[in-house]
Length: 640
Ligand code: ADP
Image (cartoon, rainbow, N blue to C red; front, side, top):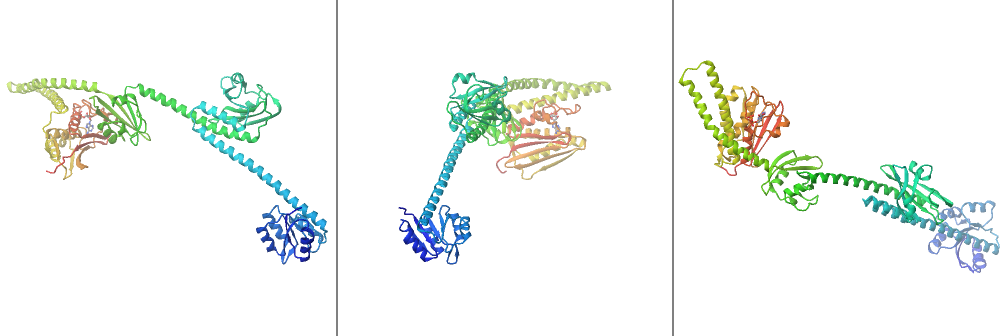
């Protein structure tokens, strides 16, 4: 006995009554009835029937159209049309609108029951079939999602590896797992012989793997190599697809590095008669794409490692200390020599703040102040060694610091200075005597013109030697720090005295000197003789190395507790290649005219004085345009 629910939506009450009580009810069906379309909608919501028998009109409603629309929402629900009156094309119209059957108004009980049973069965079968289809699709979709997630996970894992060997063996494992293949291999191309060999293999007999060699000519492997496209081959009976061994099914996928096929990933089923599908092919292709990225990464990494090792061996071998620091003052690298200079035992980690690694205030000050432009400084280490420290900024990296131990040169310099001082000192008395006696010659008898000329020559030469000796002795004293009698000095007066003292010289060359000293310029604590020597040497150089009618300017002002003194001119300028050496003793720039006398000691004296007052001096110069010397001295910290 059937007990399906049937809804009778019929306008004719008699027909409804007959079907319910005399036909369907006694046959065991649950029968609901309605005479309106609203009744149909309500039944569908509250107690959906398995079948609806409906007339072509319910009150004013055209049921053929309504059913047609309703079937979009209930595609499995069968409708049987039972019109009040039969017309020829009504049945045809009903089928066109999606009704599952048609009952003649005069149909017999048997005919009705048969039609109802068939429609319900048809509806159920259709539903079952479609659900099976959907379930099948869902399962395969689910499987695909799982596979894709696995591939993604594999991709993440592969691209995080940096060792080529690890990558290749993982690729092989994953390929065999994903396709449930019996075995797999990585076939690599031997550039020399043009043959493929097994770079790695999984589940292959070792003797086969090690002996495997295959030419790229006339076989599917060569095809993969030349086209760069993957290949899937299925054979009904096992075949020697690539001559060495028999397989039922095999996939070849190219592996690329820098857009070149460097090898082929292969999976196969040798014994099991199980075929790979296009889906397997797409899985392995996706895996190969990740493998290509991972191989590229590993190659780049190993290349950069090789370069880094090379650089490290060079830096380890050099006798200079080398430190590279980034723009945020964090360490990039430090060679063993630099570690030795700063007495650092273990190699510090790159990325650490340099202040946390090196505890040397002078070095850190130099870095902080000078790291943006190339410069050279001498730094005394805690053990007394003196380092020539060169800073070279490198854009987008930071700064490279080179340190050479120049303690032995310093010692040599000291011995030389001592010697020069002694000799200069010993020479001064005889020279004074020579000058005195030469002056007396004139007084003790008549001298002719030639003799006068010779005497003048002797005087000039002796004066030059005396001034050189005086400079040397001064320098010796300054370097030894013998000028400790410091007093409070007004730099403005010093400048004025110097300008006045040199008036004969700048006037004789028709030069103009502009002095601009800010009124509130603080005083300096220093030796007035030395400060005057410093200012005079700078102005005297400007006079010497500027042509007739040139302009010289002396400026002084305060900035953040420091006095800035500038002496500038519009003279010859100093070649850029000479600028680093002009404070060295006896150095004269390559463009210094030979007829202009000079010892090359003036600027060394100036630098010595500036250093003694913890100041700084530098030069800016453009050939043919002029030169500016800038001196920075600490201002005195109290009001007079
Ligand atoms: P010198 O006794 O030769 O003047 P200094 O030590 O005073 O020695 O100067 C060193 C060199 O620097 C000079 O020989 C000269 O070539 C160059 N120099 C110094 N001052 C100037 C300047 N104002 N203009 C151009 N060149 C200068």
